[in-house]
Length: 302
Image (tube, rainbow, N blue to C red):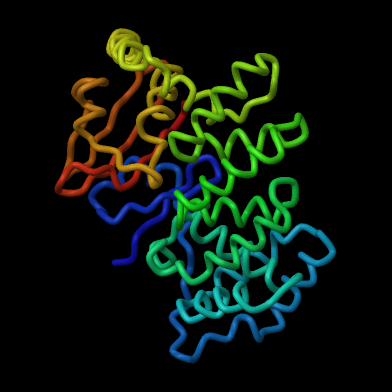
């Protein structure tokens, strides 16, 4: 059975265990409709692709044509798109980049994982060097590169900051990328935040600054106590941001979540559900593997 993808705040996460899907079925699912065609991959030679590239070229909304492109994809097409990214330039390259970006960074599709994407990293680095951080292709290439080679991408951002500094125009994007980097990135992020107390920071940057502060362990214990006492959406959302929403960049273990949040309201076949008080109607759903590693999650109504 193909994995079911469940949308959360515009993203989709993969749940392989069908017994875990009951809470998510209430909100519907948005699977990637991979084609069952037996013919060779054809999408990049199609009229549909030509129209998609044309829309991107003129900077239009790809909404309608985008859906049709994704519904027509098969695994061979993904290989063709990677080749386009490596060998083409301009609109063809940017269109391929956008599709691969959505597959891996938005939908987290299992058919396009980091281990299969190493060959596009030199092309991604070239796009980043060309148009990061202000242009959309540079931003998408950076995010995709971070998913495949996080250390190399972090090194690039760190060196970029050292050369260029962080101006107001790029602060939101660059602090986001620093927050997704390594310990050296976090050091630069903290230096910027402390030197610019009124400066703009990406939301995730605030989370990282809190999580890397000396008092974080005590704070986390406090959030855990607060959750067990109040069972409110605000605390559940913050704990999710700080403890769960680090995957797939970092492994998340259910044992760490249980230690802070206490026993869940439901455990079924490796699937854990935490419920807020009834008046809030919120819940956090977690799927784990046999070793207790969190594979997917969904936060609803919070």
